[in-house]
Structures are given as C-alpha cells and as structure tokens.
Image 1 (spheres, one colour):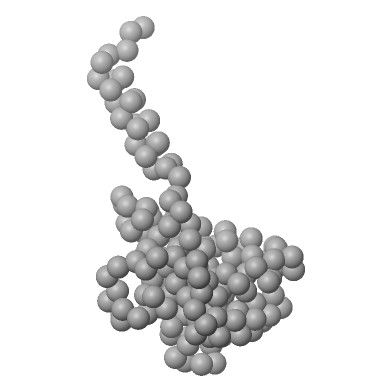
Image 2 (image 1 turned 45 degrees about the vertical axis):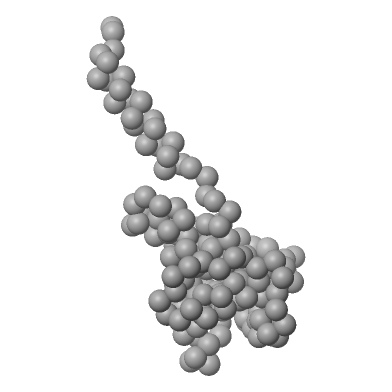
Length: 156
C-alpha cells in the first residue's frame, strides 16, 4: 500500500513537533529551575520573617518565569514543566540531603546572589542578570545563614 504525499507530510510534521517539544533545556533554563527549587525550600522553611518569606516566594516566581521564557512555546506547558521539574528536584534534594547538604547550601548562596540581581530591578524586572560566578560579600553574608537554617529545618 502506497502512502499519499499528504500522509507523509503530516507524519513529518508530527515528528517535527515532537522533536521540538523534546528539545533539551538550555543551561539558563536548568539554572532557573534549580534556583526555583532552592528558593522553594527557603520559602517553605523560613516563614517567621514576613519580609524574607515574601522575598523567597517572589524568587520562586521569578526563577519560574525565567524558565518559562527560556523554554518558549506554549506558556501553560512550560509552567507545567516547571512545576514538574521543581518537584523532581525537591525529591532529589530530599533523597540526597545527607550527602549533598553543603552543596545545596552553597547553591542557596549562588541562587540568592542571582536573585539579588532581579530584586534590585524592583518587582517589574526586565532583564535577566548574568548567573553569578563570583559572589559578593553582601550576598554571601545574607544567604549563608539562610541556607544553613533552611536546609537544617527541611531535612527533618
């Protein structure tokens, strides 16, 4: 049985659409998703300071939005991917916390320094700051104790 040119074209379009949706995440998308998970831990565990708790929730939202923008395409699908990815990362953090807690704390400092670049722009941030490779002393002093406290509480 011969395939019609229309059927072949449709099959090719379907395969192309599937390949496009299965595109690997960019480095920026992965970093943003990771930081949204780190800030989720902060938001979940450090609720006694209302100002900081609000900042952590804002950070989760900002990092999620960076992920969604980086993924492009269907916004609703990208938001679902972000939720699923963050949940998977949090599960992984739980499973590995005994071995990786110092690394997660340091990730908290890096993500905090990155978040500070967004926070400095106000609530209507317009550009994505460069993912930090060097951490300023102010961010290190702020986020080191936050990470220690958050992950200590979170692993209980």
